[in-house]
Image (cartoon, rainbow, N blue to C red):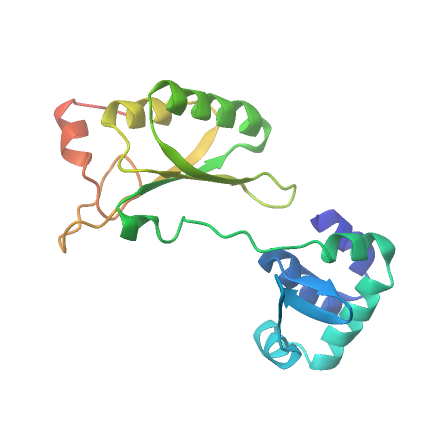
Length: 197
C-alpha cells in the first residue's frame, strides 16, 4: 500500500501525509467526506490531528475521488477493532512477535500449527508483513500461555523479537530476563527448569 501512496502522492507530500493517516486508521473517503465506518469525521478535527490545514484535506479528498485506483481503495477502508490493548485487563495474554521478513510466512505458519497442536485457545490474530514496515503479529490467547509452549515458541527460527504481554495481577512487577514483560508469572517456573537462551 505504501508503494501505491508513493506512486500517486510523490509530488504532494502534504496530501500523502493525509492519505497515510486515513489508511493507517481505516478512514474511508466517500462523497466528498471522510468516514469512520458510517460516522462522518469533522475535517477541522482531522486537520488539527494530522497537522495540516483544512484545504489540504479537501484537496486530498478531491484527488482520491478523481483518481480511480485510489477511490477504489479509499472508499472501502474500515478500521479493524482489536482485542490487543484490552487483553491484559481481561486476563488474557498477548504474544507480540517481530519476524525476519524473509521468514515471515514459514515462522507464522509454524507458530500457529504449534499453538493448535498444544491446545492453546487463540482468540484473535492480527498480523502484517508490508514492504516498508516491520513484519509483526499479535496473538491474543484466552488465559495464559503454558510454560512449555512458551519455551518452544522462543526456539522457532525467524523471530527477531518476542514480547509477552501478561495480565497484571499485583502491584509488584517482576521483570523477566527471558522475554520483555512487566509482570511474568512464568519467570519462576522457567528459572526452576534452568532454561537457558
